[in-house]
Length: 345
Image (cartoon, rainbow, N blue to C red; front, side, top):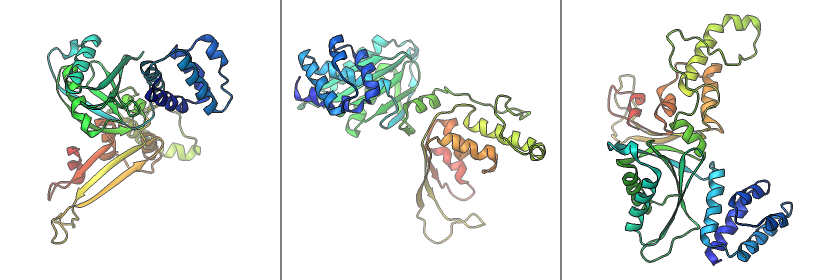
């Protein structure tokens, strides 16, 4: 192995917990049964790493084999790093007919045509997702496999999820995605999180949604919170309404585990007559950030428990309705509320 292959292997093995390492090496299928049995996973990680590197050198494995192990690790552990959502727009008439082989050929052909030194590896996962690993180089330097970009796309959907993409490479990747999927353009989805699973569940609607009900009846499957019988009887109707509103806004049951929501403010101070206070025309700029281990669950609990008044403000319900966690609240002048201007985001 060359120095770069050794570095990638060292970094990958160091990331994998000992309890998961044996199973991952078996899926990799590049070490013999005897070599796998010779590894003692109870020993310190640095010793395990050295043994794996020695076995790989004995087997004369190349960088291609090592990057394959890294891809297996990322596919098995998708909720790491920071992922950004992008949305494909203006689909062509035959976009629905794009097949995996066609996508691969056109995607690779475009990037190889604009960048001389680049490494592209693709894998199709069991859930029909296409995982793409790109090590970027340029016309003079070889690809840097220590800082690869990862892309995840489900064919025939409009969403693309990207991790670790440098600004100078963004235009090349976006062009390749637009061409390979037969769309007209691609735009920022204004959604980012460390959990790829939560991002996909939110945008692809893989959670139990609740739609407005004219009768606003309580969901039968929910577990009622314990309370005093008298209090429960007196406030039952209000509890049902709060729970219905919370589930309509954020979903029912298990919901995507987003960690943050960011609201960028570009507003002006206004008095009771809705006119700007002071002579300055400059905007008041600030950022409001909500953080939690499960933000949507926290919002839902606040509404259900009565800690927050209903109905749920559009500024919060837009997270699930629009599939975003970054918004710009702009001031459009007298008579326009901040909530309405958030539609710009």
